Length: 292
Image (cartoon, rainbow, N blue to C red):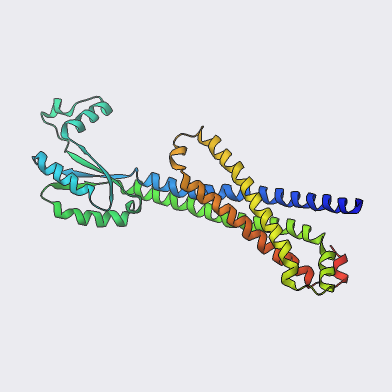
């Protein structure tokens, strides 16, 4: 009875140790997954703050302006449009430089414009070149289109660099996570290596021997993923309260995707690592069972 109690305690302790180890690894992996998806959302957010100006012809009617703005709103590249009249443009210039150009020129030199905020997939130089070609059909109302090519190119290059860095970190951490979980499970299976050999001696098939180990560790992976998600969601909630605009980029879909990814990785890595570890002792010679 005492021996049985000792076995149960040892099994419980090894199960807790395995679950805690997998939880810590999945928490770190979950952070990288979250940052990767957050980076994608941030990339979209930044790109959609970019815009270009549609400079309008002089002396066009209000009807023409409204009709043009309506047509721009219907285009696939426009997220939103804002009309700025000549008077509004002059008022903004006065706020910026503190001087009204009409006072020394005798007229308002600033044109009326429509500011077009782009959808993220069109915020690149190639797409804007095509957009300019499309706008040529409005030559009777549009004088020119203006945008900062250097800023657009710089934003896209920086986003690409950050995305590549996060991808490399995620791949490295994935390999490290697999190695850590694999070692943890191997140590747990090692303590049951003589049980595996006993099952072989009584004629148990390989699949029958592997099944309880795999199911047990997959359950540990699921529990670890749930716990890791809980800690990660708490951390995200805490940080979002101190970082402006972070909550605007974190939605239920993002959290569900991160949680689902952690759950899948926890179960999948646990299954693969257990399969390999059990197979090692199934195919091991009897003498090898006494070697760590």
